[in-house]
Picture 1: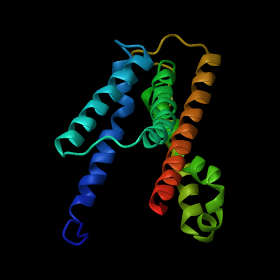
Picture 2 (picture 1 turned 45 degrees about the vertical axis):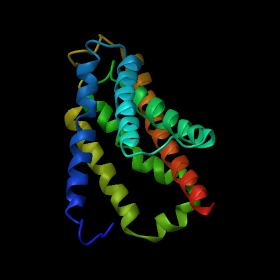
Picture 3 (picture 1 turned 30 degrees about the vertical axis):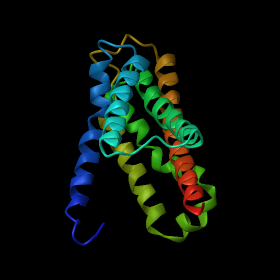
Length: 192
């Protein structure tokens, strides 16, 4: 792909990320009014999976080997079940804003877990500075957004809300682990 010719795709890609991911937490909160959390997530990913396989078949591509399916399954379980399914579970007890704030800790987890690249992360002064600014933004957002009510949120006592926040933190960690695993597998495949 000629990067100069297709530079206009970059803002479109970022717009899609902001819009699609940005409404995820809100969409989950609406979906929880009619579906249990893991059924909701399952329908979402079943639809996406069918669309992706259909697209690949139309392009004439074939399914990869069983080894690649296994590698992709590990990534999928970590990112989709852990990263997104747990968000749906947690949003039964916290608001969409609270869930978004909890998941926004992902960059912190990414740097903390990706220990082999610490020398790179901490050699660039803008990376730690960006984390500090992001953390300050999270605190400001948290102070103005956290509430204990939502249309689908059951009357939850403080202990279940704390558990929900812990689960959302684990969700963010699962997403990071899936992303790092996917990156590692891609590098291994490129070396073959």
